[in-house]
Image (cartoon, rainbow, N blue to C red; front, side, top):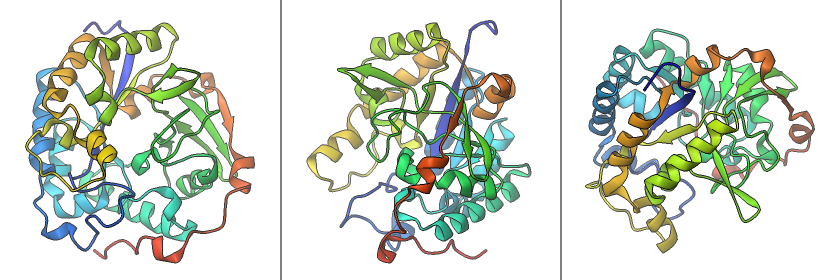
Length: 313
């Protein structure tokens, strides 16, 4: 792919196969240590694929994973990729209090910086779980030293959705200051916008549709922000006893995901989030003011749903 081609943004959410959101009665945090871990082997496979295509990406790493696989974080860095945060506990933002979110984000960032040996400035909320009711988290991100976020879905999302957010990368203004935002790429269908460039959508949609959507984004002057998980290329992963719809969404298309990823890497040009932002003047990005939404945030959640403090070092 020519260096003159428009650059898109490639990201990986480094979590294990059992890090599923909002499924009651499934595996709990107490279960995680006894379950087979496949995240290191799958991430190493992704690193090899990216090396074959000479592509660099941003890896949003869960703190809990980094604590158990510190050498994996170091291998990602050694391969030339950016390390960013995917929180400590991999929990949706709406289940956090402001205090627990601050503790979670600060602990994950501190651990990842120690392992990476360089600043960690990016964050992605698990499940892209930031909507108008969770706009307060941008203040927490600024206060904990993050410089960009990649959590907003400008339309529908399974765990969030911010219907009126800009479609292109933009600046967010919150009470604590400003922060860059790289939103999920979405496509308009039947008057609504849906993600297409990652996770179950990547596995479900045929490649010609993915290619056409990415080309449409380029014509509109927007990058495609592609995200995937290491388990996306692991058809042999253990199967969880999920409700029918979640089971379909979680496991559909696993056998073909690697081929689609390789095709995307071949047909388009990709950068990590930090490198893409560095090449785009911040002054040219639109400003999205979320101060009003943050003031209207609901009260803190049920204490029973608030994640515990991050594990001590």
